[in-house]
Amino acid sequence: MAQVLRPTVAEIRLSAVRKNLQKLARTAAPARLLFVVKANAYGHGAVELARLAEREGLAWGFGVSSVEEGLALRAAGLKSPVLVLGSLYPFESFVEAINADLMVTIASLDAARQVAEAARKLGKTAACHIKLETGMGRIGARKPSVIKIYDELSGRADVRVAGVYTHLSSADTDPDYTGAQLAIFSETAAELELRGARGLVMHAANSAAAMNFPVSRMDMVRCGIAAYGQAPGFEPAMTLKTSVVFVKNVREGAYISYNRSFRADRAMKIATIPAGYGDGYIRRFSNKADVLIGGRRCRVLGNVTMDMTMVDVTAVKEASVGSEAVLLGRQGAEEVTAQELADIAGTIHYEIVTQISARVPRVFAE
Image (cartoon, rainbow, N blue to C red; front, side):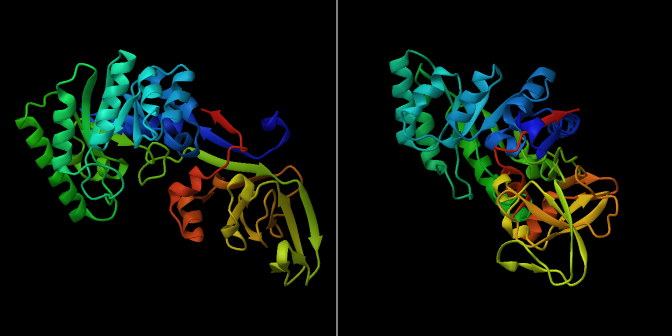
C-alpha cells in the first residue's frame, strides 16, 4: 500500500549489488567474503540482499551488529553463517544467539565465561570469534587478554573458537596506522599459533582495506559500504526518488518554508515533493542540496520539513505534478551522490544512506 499510495521510495538495483559483490569476491580470493548487512544493509534492505547473496552464492556469510539483526535473517530463512560483530549485553542474549546458530563476538574474559555457561546450559556448541583491539578503541581485547580468552575457551567441548579478528580504523586515510594495526594482529596470530591454535579464520579487512591492502585480506574480508556502491570503483545501488505533488508560481519577495528561510529574489516556479527529514532527507540540506527533476539540478528552497521539501523548478518548463524527482542517485546525465550530500551535511556517506528511514519503502529492481 505504501509503495502505491506514496511516491517516495528507495529503489535498490540488485544488478549493482551483484556486480559489487562479484568484484569484491574476485579481489579477495582466495579469502572468503563476509557480506556486512548490519543497519538494514546500510539502509538498502538486509533480508532481500542477503537472500540475493545466498541464492547466487555471492558471499560465504553475513555480518550483523546485533543478535536481533541475526534473528531477522534466520526468521527470513537464511541458512548461511552469520557473525554478530557487536559486543553482546546483557549476556542472556548469548542464549538466543546460540539457539539461532549465530556466531558471536567475544571481546572480554567475562564474555568468554558467559558464552561457555550459556552453551553448557543449552547443551549446544557455541561458535565465536575473538575480537582483538589493535587501535580502533571501540570493543576488543588486547593481545594478552586475547591469549587468555583463547586458553579459556579452546579446551571446552561446548565452545568452538572459529576465528579472530580486528577492525582497521583508518584504512581509507592512514596507511601507516593501518600497517601498525596489522602488525599487532600478525603478532597475536603468531602467538596463538604457538599455543596450538589451528584452523582459525583470521580477518581484518573492511572494504577500504580489502581494496588497498592485499596483506589485510587474510582468510576473510568483511565488506559493507563497497557492496552498496558507496566506494570508489563500485556502482551505487540506491536511488531515493519521489514525484512532484504540487507546483506553484510565486512573486518576487515570497517566502518559502519555516521561519521564512528562503525569500524569492524574482518570480519563480516552485515544486513541492513529499520527502523530508522524516524520511531521512535531513534539514541540513535546506537551501543547499539539489534535487533532479527533468534531468536538471533544482535547488532546495527553504527549510526541509518533516514530510515535504520545496525546490526551484523555474528552469524546468515541463515540471508538473507527477514529475519524477531524484534526491539521491542518477537521472539522465546528472547525478546526486551520497558523498555530495555528506559534504553538505558535514558527515560521511555511510550516514546518508543508513539514515533513510523505515517509512520509505525499499523497492528492488534488476
